Image: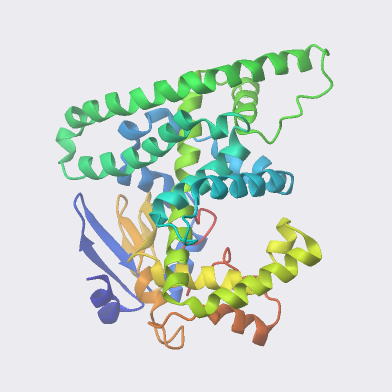
Length: 391
């Protein structure tokens, strides 16, 4: 349906029905750039997520009413990422060793996405909550359950008309709250330790909290220093939400990459050679991984070919007129025609063909250009959306 609309109305907009509303799909570089440049007062990602994920019922109303936890991802985590790298790498190695128990023939059958979820979860939790909680089986299961429940319950809610949401949502909220309570029981001792540590620091008994990049410590400090009402249940919800954001999409990319590697085994040897050569010369660091251009290209091509029909959701908050003259009223939800854009012959040669080194060849031709890396975005590559709220 999206492809048909893209073919008919490229450079313009069209709408498609979803379970709960009409969704307007925009296409063409000009409209994509308009969305990229639009301020939050005109287009909001958060408002869209509240509707799609029904966050008032699945996550709790306070999470998006005051999303201060997002600040952790934008500042301290990014700032201290290099310091976390060794811990994350070691956690990945340990998790893989535990999960990949080879049989006598040197083979083992494992569900790719489930394994990817576990590996990404352990590495993420190592950075967010540290040892030993990141290896606690109950906490890991609760975090995974919360992620799955948000997806499933939001889809169920979207099948009902708005008038019935309070009734259906009450049942959903009560179920999610049980998961949150169990997770809180695990997190509570760490929160208490952070509070005591901060008291010692404030009173001069300790020189430093030495935990500025730890998620729990950062949330405790942010809540107290900003004068917010401090509540451990609310803090637990925010930790679970950050897990939800960090783990789900990353695990999907990892499992898709594994499937593509199995379908195109000719890429395994050159990628392995590149990784081994760089690691031997520089070790495992954030900087060395940035030099693994073949690996980067393979993952980028995996995302290009595997992205769903539409991404980059926004809700129009004020009547908005695009550069091409199309006007959309407040309350309209929009998205990009991502899959058609990624499979457009005007943007990519042989667009329906998986070419693992497509972007490596581009780097070779154009030089060491950051725009060719996995995390870079543009009007022709919209895996994470576009603009300040790309994700």
